Amino acid sequence: MRHPLLPGCRIDATRMRTWLDSFEGYRVAVSQGAIERWIEQFDPGHRDMAARILDSVDFINKLRIQAAFRTILQSLPGWSIQENQRLGKWRFVPFSGSSGTSADSMIHLFRMANALTSRQFNKLFIYRRDLLQEDYTENDTIVFIDDFSGTGTQACNSWREFFSEIVPLRPKKVLALVAISIRAQQRITRETELEVWNDIQLRDSDNIFHDECLHFTALDKQITLRYCRRADRSNPRGFGDCGYVVVFPERCPNNSIPVLYMSHQRWRGLFPRHD
Amino acid sequence: MEKNQDMLGAEGIGVKNVPTLELKPNPHNPRMLFDRKPLEILRESIKRVGILVPLTVYRERRTGHLVILDGQRRWICAQNLKLETVPVNEVAEPSLAQNIVTMFQIHKLREDWELMPTALKLEVLMRELKETNAARLVELTGLEEAVVVRCKKLLYYPKGYQDMMLDADPDKRLKADFFIELYSVITDRDLKKMSWFRRDRFIDQMLEKYLIAPKIIKSVTDFRLIKQHMTNARKAGKQHQLSSRLQRFAEKREVPIETLELSEAKVHATASKLVRDVVRIKTAIGQIDVESYYGEGELWDALVELMHLLQQKLREADKRI
Image 1 (cartoon, each protein chain N blue to C red):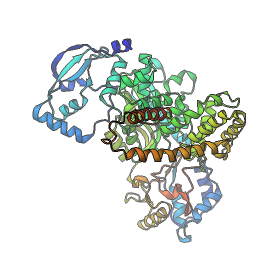
Image 2 (cartoon, each protein chain N blue to C red; image 1 turned 45 degrees about the vertical axis):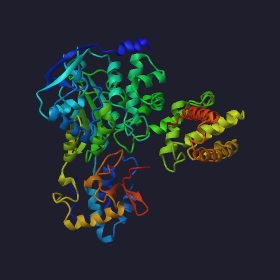
Image 3 (cartoon, rainbow over the protein chains, first blue to last red; image 1 turned 30 degrees about the vertical axis):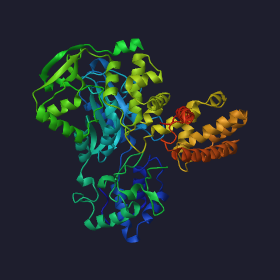
């Protein structure tokens, strides 16, 4: 979570410019008009707090995603861009893809980040459906690539439902994530055969409703929760009660607070998850 | 088939006790198969009387490891009970195909499993055995014929589409049913001849109509209706008319399925009449007192004939019997 400005700071052109620059690249353009309309959904007395919520949004843009993927791959034991210096066989697989298309933006960013875009590296990047097609040894590594895990539910469920059926037993299996919460990391490690590697780790202090989060007062949290209930009655603190304010360019995770992404008659989120 | 059977025969080497921790799980075993409750029952039984049926294992030539072919549940229980050794029956190392067939036979397909992983294992088997005949695959794997047919339909699709059924995110994951229902449309012999038709582009267009609101394709069974329109057009010799309508339907996101209707009303009326007839016959058959009609051989022959015909038609329509 980013540090919000102090209470009472004006919503001036500089602050607006900062938001617009920060949120550039979201799948649905975030304009000044959209920001103003979003803030106007709060009562006049609560708009300062709404602005501070926007200050605290951690928009992880494509450059940060690439930097994270670079850090992770360089840290993985046995990896080298030089084939003859690599330990065993390496394969990279998207853990989740772009909705409704066969192209994959996350893999593209991963390849860009690690200078793996040239054709000679194509064989390293395989489809999920190809996991069963090769023979692997204990020296080999399969790296699953994704952006975020808030609770670990998706990773564990998909592991139980089908990945465990098609992922070879022998090689080391790595889940490379840009960001993950500590509890998701613990759960995935416990319930799957995946070894989790990440760049950004979300803690209790990143949960806007948690006592550890010191950027907002107890009253702020109470008021925010009221608006979050309007946005999503069933998950007002975000899925898994995570209370995060993290946003990725492709989609705002549902673990973030619903005032950011829910869109319906009673609320218009700034970062809608669906078209 | 003889060749396949030869490939699938495993040669026995003998029963012995080996250290529990020396064994390795089978790489082709479904790892999440083991429900906790039945495992607890098995563990209690092993605790009381030990492992009565030896595990079937093979020594992997490449690594020297003893790998479990059959008995992974017993092995898990033995580990839980901290048994130092387990009885094993060592057999010759199976081929990849033998291994997968054994796994299919031991761990029958669970109904709630996703179909795509099964399709992928079947693909390996078909490649290894050079066997694509559905009936033989049924015999080898113990899967239902309808499951084999559905798996083969999924394997028809390019890899990118297959991956959509294996997405970690349930919001992005597509159900196999979408592709199974679409199959009969995109493999239609008339559609393939239409000059504008490009398979992958057409699949993308159908995905858009299915995924993006307002949904034009509301249910995967809508593809049956599309197929029905195509068949009706063929019967009426109106393929040209249908081609242009189908092109418009595919290329313009908002165009509804109804635009494909040519002689649909007639078929629908016939279908409705058939449903009424079926209800009447069902009631009449239901009222038969078997003992009273026991000697009416002609009736029973007619019913058997009807049953065969129903099974045949249901199979043709890819319905599970």
